[in-house]
Amino acid sequence: MSLDFRPGAFNDFFKTETFRDDFTYRNSPHYIRRFPFPFDRDEYMYAVNLEPHVPGRKGSVFEKTFDVDEHYVAEMIDRAKVLAEDPLRCQSLPHMTLAGWDTLELIMETKAREYPEWFSLTKDGNRWHWINRPLGIEQSFTFLDESTLPYPPFEYIMRQTQGDWTLQDERDGTLWMDAGIATSQADWSVDFDVGMNFHEWHAPVPLAHEKGIFDRALKFLLKLQHGAPVRRFNWTMTVNPLLDTAPETYPKWGPDRTTLTQENMGHKMHLRVELQTLYRLPRSNAIAFDIRCYLGKFEELVTVPKWGRRLHRVVRDLHPDLAAYKGFLRNRDAMAKWLSQYDDGAPTSPGWWPED
Amino acid sequence: MKISLTPVDAPSIRSRPVYAPLEARSASRYVIVADGEGADAVVEMLAKANDRSEILSAAHVMYVPGPNGTDKTSALEGLQASQFFRAPTIPSLLPRLQRVLLDAHMGTQFYLAGTESLIGQAEREIMATGFPHAAIQKEHRGSTLRRVQCVHCKGITENVATDPFKCSHCGLNLFVRDHYSRRIAAFQGVNIDAEDPGKVPESVVRFK
Picture 1 (cartoon, one colour):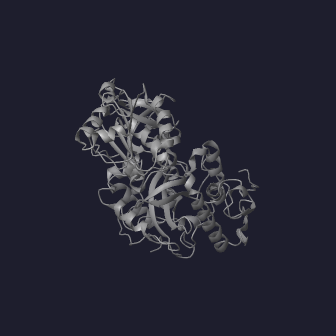
Picture 2 (tube, each protein chain N blue to C red):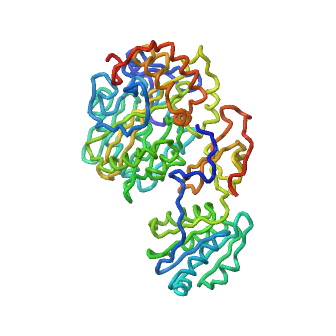
Picture 3 (cartoon, helix red, strand yellow):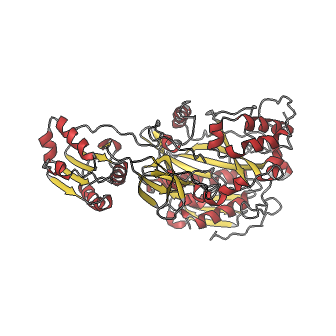
């Protein structure tokens, strides 16, 4: 980062860890318990499953609007590295600048309110002053004046925000992904998809079109109101705690999928959960889509008995087209075999919470 | 990453453009861009038009022979449109189209006919000027050769016939996904042997 970047200022909370090379990422014991385990039953099939994004259980990833967790600083360092290697990962078509400002405002105001110990925003008319203590950033700027920030507004705030984001312009009765950043994506290309409409960018997803999932989801999203965000889960599997599983770099990380054994499965295989939230933006009327990625090692997740049992059943029984789309068909049997050690056949309680 | 190959006649996925026969609609100006067998679509559309001579007197026709060698220049030149232009290749046609678009007013009707590569690249130029979707008609005729962007190096390989194929820029073995970007006017190519380097299925001709 070219900003005044001082990682380490809050080392008692934010971890020093990597999502590449030596892969030192892991969840602290307390973080395993708060992992957003996405399966509320022992099987999985697509559903729209949108619900209001309202504050949830204390200590959970739903407690705040934007969950700033122990991985925040390390994720931002990883994002800066990805953008340095490939600037095409952050794109915004010319008409999306206002939506970028809307997004910056949403994030700055919310974080300053929800985490006053780390973030602060003061305003004097359009003269704004932003402090991000974990990243060592202090910035005075004029709201809606691009020349006063070191990056365009969308990229500026995205370099300080966990999760991949896309911004959707609404016109012709559909949503157009006209801006986006992807450095922690599950194998989709922002460079290829930017400018597509809702059905176009979902085109490669198997089974869901036929079930009418996307038609219903679009209908719902077009009614999304400012101040009433919604959320849903998605998930996949990733070998090694690699945030940036981009199609661009697939030749580099694809071979990792051939390195799994029963001995290293628990450590190397990760359940990758996306907490997706959607916000209507006030000035641009665009919709911001936050795809926040959580990585949980198999060996971490099975420390919760209910999750060990359930993950085994979901992986074992998943429709092969979905396993192929999610990229783990070749390893599915080995994953199910490893997980079966943690499934004694006992019934599981409904819902995803660990203790229920 | 799904690597099974989709048969070319399988039901199309949702990012794939949908094409319908060209239909004569009255407008103030007509910009007609075609390649290869697309010339037939233009001729047939005009044959059915009630106001054929009015259309032709306000039409600018641009034509390129198809990637398979089909050259129907004489059929289009013989229409005696107010302007006719033949370019040897699509890249050599685009600067003229860009110049024409500078003067095009709302109320202009665009007809694009021929290969997906021609349609996609012409449509991209037109949309960049802000013309609405509804002003552009597209009919696919002739070659199904594809214009494919390598998702890894971003280079575009024209006239791809086989799947998988070798990227003409970085040399990776790519399979052709049925995922299309109108902004890039290309299908997406993804490395097929990333997980097992060297294990490349035999190429089959999928696009002709």
